[in-house]
Image (cartoon, rainbow, N blue to C red; front, side, top):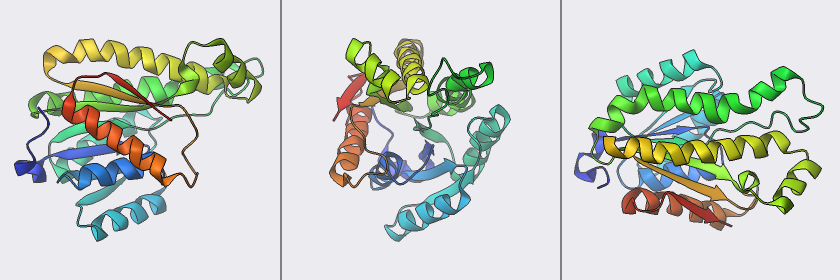
Length: 232
């Protein structure tokens, strides 16, 4: 059961890794259903523009500038969202890192950074928000992932050739993590869903693609049956 929209003012979507692509479409899609929306990223100007755009559509929104690669900032952000917008119903993790493009050339720090944002701090955010997600009717974790993480020789070759080795490894680890969280959080009444984007969307003019991905997230959230959906 999804969060009761009759009490939507107390239901908050947290968009971690906000930008003009997928996450903006997700924020608007859920906002149209009565969710308050917390936008999180490092770029304060981008966040302010996002809040203004959502508010112009009648959606309650607020900006929370934070470095999602920093554990302390992630924890403070979750506390700040809860204090300002109320109980967290949905956590959307859209943040990723392009570190370690060529893993043979990357130093140990860059290699470790491959996992910091998409895996380690995703877990930090989940643990910090979990009390809210458990108590909220229809609490959910929604994760954006990419096709580079699939176990396929052609995809592996493409990731190596295009300098996306770190991203591919991170996506694969994130998919495994999402799969395990699906089972771990189900007894706690927290749904976990992942949309795997199979083509380039961010920064493109493919507005229909962004809308399709946002609708896929909303479908997963409301239906609560599938764990993963591929788009593109």
